[in-house]
Length: 393
Image (cartoon, rainbow, N blue to C red; front, top):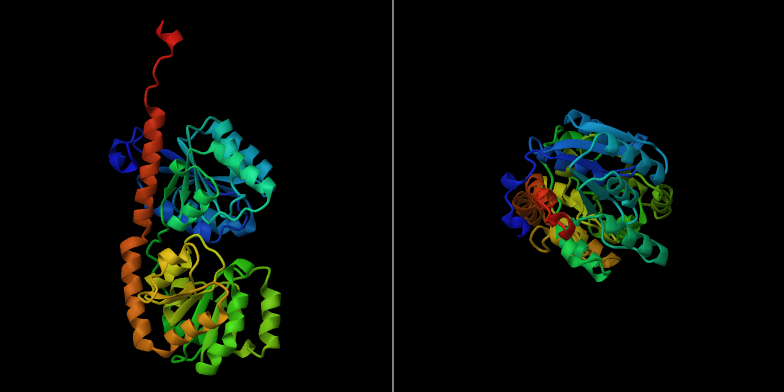
């Protein structure tokens, strides 16, 4: 029987008790994914959240509290300590299924082992990024870790392909592409621009991403002079923090670009910020399926991104935005120039992106697909087992 053939209404447990787990101390995009999934689950599962009691995980915990979920705050310590606490909780308050969310390939294994040790019948793991392991010790730990897991959920086809190429069993993987819930802006775009010191009519390119090597800000920095020669009035806003902040600020100062780029660690109304932009730029080196691309489309804005895993599925090149090869500075610059120089084209791509997001990348669809996996596992787990030969006698 396939997942599609199992009606959620036929699930053996009408309202299963599900524990969503992350061991990340900084669950940014992963945390937003978990919240959207939880909201779309409302009335269909009894939710538990297990997450580190860390300052940067506080927002995730508060969101789940507002949803009425049971909260298991894990120690803000190493993963072994977290797993020990999780196993104790599961033994005391059993759940039907544990769903581990891994922001990167080496996360989450201790949590899955804790679930198995506590006797949880079904364990699911979501991979939010493609397979990136290169060290033999990490590869071995991953292979041992997934032995504790019944299903591996991949957030895009490209993510699944990367794990398949690494030798992960294809029949244990399922694709559930990311989706987002409705997030209406609370601020007017003109107000957002004014607060950032951006004139109403100035071409504005926004990048929302952690300041890490993965997100490719250094490539965008190198592309800025070419863009500004063609669109000298352009402004850029980079939203995020991370280990490259000092290096990026120094690079902007060194190249005389600081007046054109505003760096802020966060924004209180990201939907409004995206709506205030003319284009959203994502020069990533790799992705799973980036939520900010979906959020940009939901705001009716075109996306310029790199043709890497995840972005290739989110952005339709020449229809909802432009995809360029990763590390190709000139191609990145030319794509941004094209959008900022052609307002009717940008508006057309923005409208198409909104329709594409609403058709394919909603949290309701994501939750429905996920519930199908839960139904498959819980139906199997509750099926009567055949008697052994000894018992039959």
